[in-house]
Image 1 (cartoon, one colour):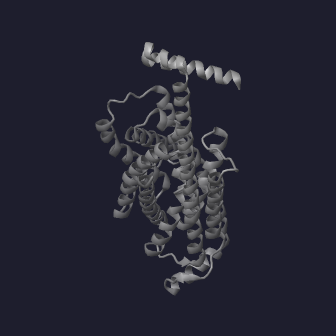
Image 2 (image 1 turned 180 degrees about the vertical axis):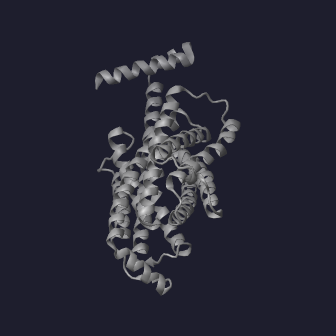
Image 3 (image 1 turned 180 degrees about the horizontal axis):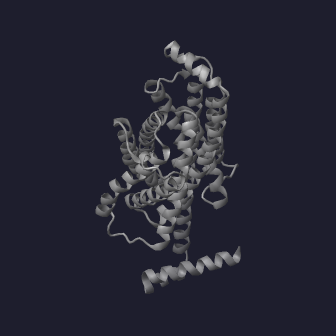
Length: 372
């Protein structure tokens, strides 16, 4: 449990740096289609040899390739495309605040699929629901309540920012960016569910992530060429652009996707997506120190709510797992007691060994179903 928690904290911290670097180069005029293509290509090149070395014995079936292609299209290409557009129209902190809706979307989508179940008579289910809504409440506070500045930047910067934010074009971009980010959150939530199915059938994190990046690079390149065929946009200018695409490819689309896939396999999609609110806190700190954005009371209060909701949801998940494990243990114990009390079962076991046990288990199951 603690290992998965630590992994997701590190993942969100690394992704926070990715978002700050992306916002910085977008402010300087770098095209987000170019970022998306380079990022996934670098990730595929980095992970391919690692996957071949550690997971070369695992066979890759056709239906897994199809699922990975869909997963790349939904969770990488479209999601990052929408997120980069929303990031360009808004800010790094604002964009990450919208990502706090991912746990809610994932939880709601998982219910009809049977991945998550809610029995409101249990404390664990109430905790999951409460934690989810507390996270959303914190996100709404981050967006809607600004409050007084706790740490101020230079006065010239504050005045310039206030003038820009008040303009009509800025407000229009802010609304468009919000819609794009909301759509991206919905697609990313779908990716968690798709990846949960892939992880059960193909538990190879390096190989699946390498293929995800490979498919996403091809999809992004095609999308880029369809929109704009200019060759100049593919040229990286300056150390910051090179650092951004390399870091976002190796870490953001490479190692972080491997870690998230591993957590989805170990703890499920809702557990993994529940850590998304932590990204907001990390970005707020980096936004102030690197991009010179101010830290307001609303940001701090909202972050506290977000983290509180995360731990409430995680507590509910862990409590649910404990209850399920205890229930399975009791059922196994009752089954063994039934066999020991039945002399026919003991005789059958002595004559036929383990094969007899399997046959009698099937017969007993049929009898119990018939009686019920």
